[in-house]
Image (cartoon, rainbow over all chains, first blue to last red; front, side, top):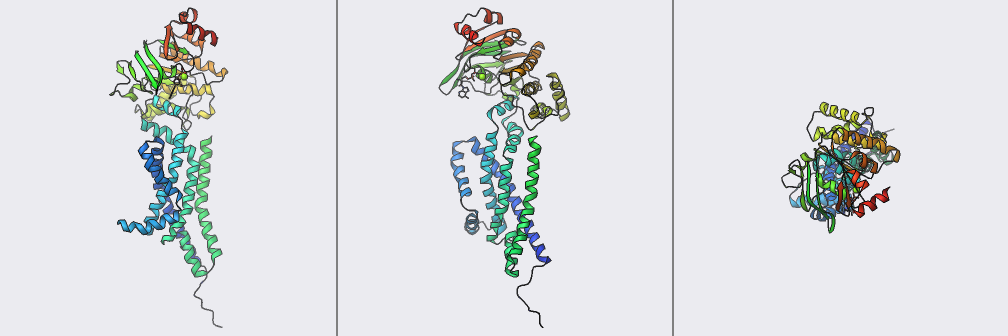
Length: 220
Length: 240
Ligand SMILES: Nc1ncnc2c1ncn2[C@@H]1O[C@H](COP(=O)(O)OP(=O)(O)O)[C@@H](O)[C@H]1O
Ligand SMILES: [Mg+2]
């Protein structure tokens, strides 16, 4: 009897590699966006905290837009409209730009909360020792406020990592896109989505564990 | 020497200090007493430039605190300040709390800063607590830590703003003892305080503030025994 030749072939070890590589791409685009977004977000949070009228009037609504418009819409709009203003970005770069701004919009509020968590008396004490404004910020406000809002920041970071799946709509082959490709070929959605889910878990679990242990150490 | 001339301070429309004239000589211990809201804390903030002033001047060793060109951060290293709230840096050990400013403000090496910090912590009786985090210290110990932190800058003046007011009664003594020790060592001190015993026993002069005015100043014997101002007598009758 002839074996049935099928266009759909089963899931094999190579596919696992394929998913693994895609998971690394998810990790890479997330790490990059979270890093850039955090730096931008801290600067924005500081501007919001300092509350100079002009900056707040322009920055706050701008950040609100990125916080409230669904990420998938931002991605598609940016990817399709960027070339019109002369920016020819590939899906990866477009994803990094939007994910970074999105992260920054979320981190800005977290960062402002962190600065607010360090009260005026603490800062007066720092300044009374002769610290400059920037030394107070660097050595007192950031470490104390940073610890206070660290759990909130971890929440943002893990969220952005999961949301990076949306960059798949631009055709960037990260974990979700890779799963879709394999599902089309193997017709085994349950197996493949379970594996992809396991990869997402494997990416975020160490981060939550590590941050929990950091928090415990700081709490002593 | 600290010279305060015709100092006026407003918070918006609120006139908080109404023309203060005061000299504090080197080696002198001045206690400042008066009801809450009379402007005592604000006076200290005007002396080390934490608050701007609207009229008059504060001169510390020939430097005008509020002049445009004054390096206020440098000047503040001369003026240690201890607050009602002790404000320990919670992320640093006792030693690191004290060593931080010498390192970053004065540019001392790590080893030098640690030596200075250890010396000052021993000075205030916290020699056993060098590597302990503030959360493991009592309020009294944290306040002494704050004193050591200020002393590590090798200030020539110390400003105390109700350093014992936030403490549990049984912890007040150890902080007052530390302040007494500094006074005996010849430190120039301005102490805003509600501890009348301390004001009477330790200070060279006592100043009474009433609604933004320095109503009366003189040796403790005069203020506590023979106050000239009606307000002073009333205030003292109430705190006793
Ligand atoms: N940052 C501020 N803004 C507005 N008003 C203030 C501020 N700080 C103090 N005041 C007001 O100034 C007056 C004097 O305050 P303060 O110097 O703290 O008094 P004291 O230390 O004698 O209790 C009070 O009426 C107080 O409400
Ligand atoms: Mg006060």
